[in-house]
Length: 220
Image (tube, helix red, strand yellow):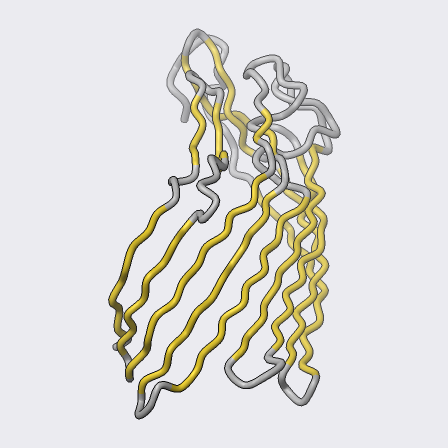
């Protein structure tokens, strides 16, 4: 149930998704390469969305939406100790029906859904004698622009989150099940905007600034 406020529905219904996926997983180069590729279609029925009345938020149901896309992951080990990885994703997620009350129109992109995203990484490991090995790696990720809500909403203000790219560095030594590492996260000190809401107040979640540190971990 919702809070009893004029203009809000007293209850809202459950939502459901029907997911369809077709994929391929294969190795090549005598096991030194691996590819994972998938196509998907998600039909979202009776979606739950936030609505607003008399200063109070509540849930309502908003018809249906569809998300279609492709995801790919590639891993290569061209030489001993070196691992290269990459991912790429494309998503087209839209409303199929206009949501009553000015919340969103047919064809609006789903909130917080980037069309493009991906990552690349590289790590090299080398023996240091005995059961000790060293490692060093770099990883970068990219996320395209997103919308905080439905573009045509008359209830909530629209905000566009810009695309961003982040780079992380990491290196250290491993001994048996123990690992000591040093790291630099968000090397470029990017003020990436990770999420946002204009419901009740305008808030933007921002990536933590450049962070330098060390860690000790073990597996058990």
